[in-house]
Length: 439
Image (cartoon, rainbow, N blue to C red):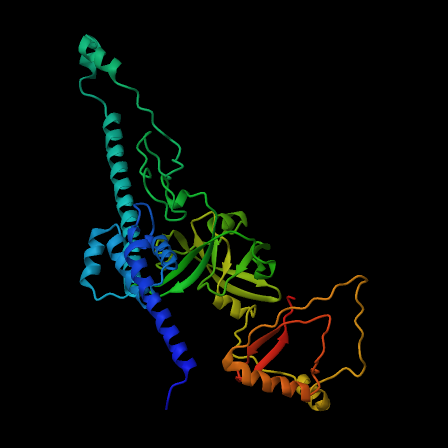
């Protein structure tokens, strides 16, 4: 069978376009893409780094090479040399590289917190030891009182600068220390990721959401941090009355929370006096850092018309929002799980069955409608658009069909208005023909 000239022409066009695309890929990879000069900054988190790499790759026609090139850029551009050596030994994919880098960054943050706690304990012990030595009476006190200080001792006393002891906690690290010895200097906050302060004294507001997680040794409740940008809808809050003191507190309803939580500030403000039991269970935020918990307490509460004894974690935090977890919400019937949606009425089917003649065939207005134009209007004739050769036969058949159905009418004489048509192929491969609404 001899190939059609049009098919040969289309094939050559496709080959030419494909060849040009391949040339464009080689050019962008070797020369124009800033992706290959992008390295992780010293104070930049890995999530910010991988997000910027993906953004830069959007301007490049990498296609199937995209994930592989981003993976290579991660290995070459990350700051940690130990992590880079590990990635080079692994059989890597992009997902695996991202997972390993995030795990390493999380481990480094936890290690920094442990090292910080150890350093603070050492400083406090040394200071206390020195204070004890100062408080002990000197053996040679009677001797020196008789002779008086020598000239060298007086000069040393004059040269010694006075030590200014700080009694208020530092606003950057939260600890008490001498001036210019803050442990938070040049450290990155795990809450807002800014320098020179710790997360526990960070002034950025947070909403605490509790999610249950599993641990090998003991039960862990994960506490995630979500930035406050818009006030939550009032429908997702519920007033809880504490029967012991007959006072109420507004709780956030969180189906993602694995437990109930209340802050120690709210606990004291309500005047609750029930003893808080110690617990081995822990609260942790989304990146694994532990949230301080004072203990656990069972309180008699009333929500609407139901009275229940509920377990609450008491968090040693002022900014923690009171939260009711999923299990409590189900017990109080404040939320309900919907497995599937079922149609309860057949109104639409009844209407279609009752007025069957309306939904069959082509509807037509019985009377003609006359469009009134503004005085002094000017007609507009648009040039006919070219119809693709492959659609011309199907286009003519569709016009004949519409003419037979009375939808359109053939016109063989000049008119004041001529509009071009728009052709759209339907999912069933038929054509939809409409007038261009933009004209």
